[in-house]
Length: 189
Image 1 (spheres, rainbow, N blue to C red):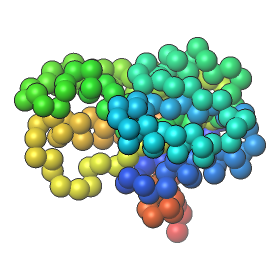
Image 2 (cartoon, rainbow, N blue to C red):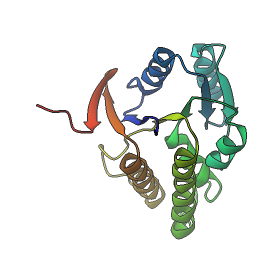
Image 3 (cartoon, one colour):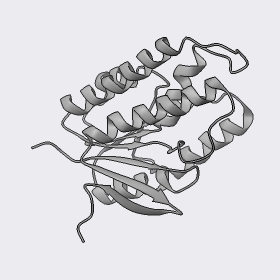
């Protein structure tokens, strides 16, 4: 029997990571937390430290900024629940390999291929491992249209990544002000 998989999406600081951790603690399972963020500056280092302090000490952590599916397959080591936090940073990490955000051009087809491959590898990992998964991501397409092509491409490809994961997982929740609103399967009236 396949174990449950969940996608948590929402705005920045909407409670996604906190809710993922709450679900994992309540499950009582052996947890592997996959952290995709890279500490590019002091403020990001502080955010990473906050996340590290909030985790139960028994959890294992795998830091993987790209090739996340492959890294999970190599290092899952009996994990019963795997949290991938977060897809937003994963897509950002792929972008950072192809643009410095001051460039006016980016190889959009190459970035699209890499994002699609990365998400495909995560889905393959989900299909192969006997573990539950919780994917954390941001919903960035609900605001203004970004002013430049690179930011629009990022928004579009993160939206694509989220759609691909949402198609495959069992449940999707939109986090609003710390509250999970069930999107998939649609709640029954």
